[in-house]
Image (tube, rainbow, N blue to C red; front, top):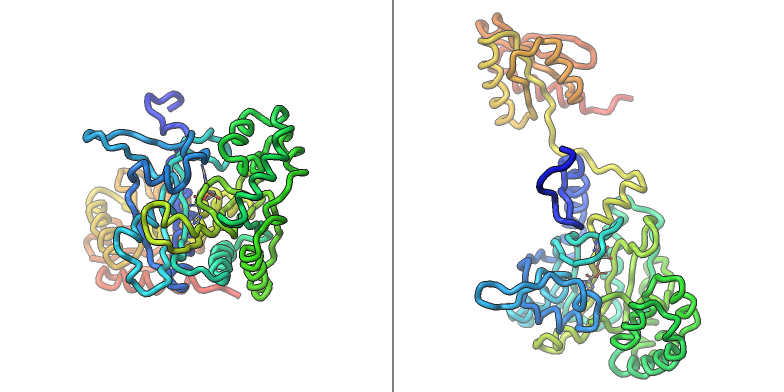
Length: 429
Ligand code: HAM
């Protein structure tokens, strides 16, 4: 319909059956990689107390300032649709006393997120993320483990030539000193910054480094970097992360301009870039050692990542990677006449309960039209039922490619079909 009365809200989209194979592929690959590495699946509610994100993600972040779907429920509680998955997972860790579980605690999620952003290619108001959090490990190998996990998912999906971008944001010891330097540098350039950055300069100057506007880029290019201001501990941590990555032959690019949009990060930061243009990171993450304490829990370090499922699927399409085929009909059941139609219906149900994908058109269409439908579906076999077959309790099995036909008794029909499908599925030399 050209102008329907209702449409999906701006920045959201329906996932239609043609897309479903990609979603299953990402989901299954993620589940396998995470399961093998000992990550348990966690699901948190779609909405959380607003304050969790204000404290967790940070009041000066774009997400909290401009992008949250916040509402009051009927009891006047302020709730927010989750814009990201890390703060909710930390909330769950505290709430369920996971500190007493064997450490480190490894959790993975596949969830929808909500951000009121300006919709454009690869940017939605409802998007899905696969993500993982490794909680309770301070040592640099944990950072490397999380990066390697993220890369393994991309690799298992068949994506190639992605670029790993790395940075360190320091910690509460060295970052304040650096921020002073940055503010000193940006101060005289304030008027030349874009409007957003002028605001960021006041609220969170670090975020200026992330701006994609041309006029800001020129200023950013000359700015001092956090990497040059790391304290001894943060420097040592970053160096060790790089050594672990080298050990695994993981190729990376050190990029001091990566700051990411969430305020909770400390030390290691990373992003994985694909080919769908700049500003569309396939995924990203890093260490966030102070988040748990910030939201009222124990002082426990953690590191994790999140990757956008829609963006992964875009990248799969761009790189022409096809998802493996899912379950689908393999047999079309066709009828010749009224009495055969009832029988066809029964045969379809029988084949389905035997685990054979079967469909049929139970209208009064000609046999020619029915076989055309079978062709369109791409099924290897058709079953044809006429008056005689109803009478004899038999069925005709037709090989759609060669046109060869064979009669089989109904009692052995499913078995015969399964055998034929097995043969059809075998690769021919
Ligand atoms: P994030 O970078 O905000 O990080 O989001 C992670 C990924 O989600 C992005 O790299 C991107 O692929 C995808 N994404 C984000 N916003 C959108 C959008 N509006 N439309 C489509 N895709 C989007 C986080 O959310 C952190 N919680 C990741 C993390 C986990 N860090 C540590 N642990």
